[in-house]
Image (cartoon, rainbow over all chains, first blue to last red):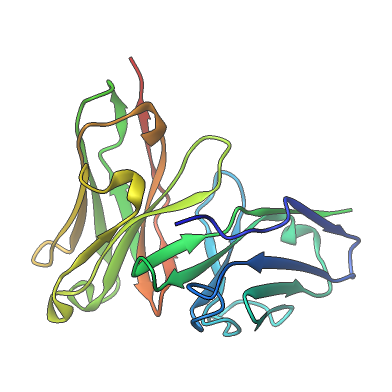
Amino acid sequence: QSALTQPPSASGSPGQSVTISCTGTSSDVGGYSYVSWYQHHPGKAPKLMIYEVSKRPSGVPDRFSGSKSGNTASLTVSGLQAEDEADYYCSSYSGSSNFYVFGTGTKVTVL
Amino acid sequence: EVQLVESGGGLVQPGGSLRLSCAASGFTFNNAWMSWVRQAPGKGLEWVGRINKKTDGGTTEYAAPVKGRFTISRDDSKNTLYLQMNSLKTDDTGVYYCTTIRTAAADCWGQGTLVTVSS
């Protein structure tokens, strides 16, 4: 199972928006509504930010939103704040393996 | 409050074995699907394996790189998840996280335990 494809980096100034893409295939991202997104500050435990494509767990700010079109999912962070600087990973259920696959990860920098 | 505390990491030689444990509290463990996720130094997150709850068959799934070498099990009487790792390779070096699973997402994470495979 190959990793989902994410851009290595993304950046924006405080208050701006940044969107991260996550491209898979019809066997994973495109075939199921089981895409999730994680925020990972190095040295800390990753944190779930979005599940089932666009749902936010309790406590996650509504500045974080998710969507999907075809085989590509996206995470948008609006109103960027300094604490949003982190690595972000997407994940999807894969029907071909009956398991999950992560994306390659995107480092978000707040300028 | 959900708590997941991993233990058992350390230094092991290639070809050796190690068993990781994850002590769970703050939720109904026997009703939860659980997983292990790892991160090699300087690399991204990687799913290792998953175990369903017993009423869903208690079945397991593994990522291709660990299939046949790693085994996930659970002791619901002790609220503990395990990862038995055999025939370890240097590529298995990394931080191993225990997570709960809800609708194909890892919704709660432990702090991780470091496994180093080196001679």
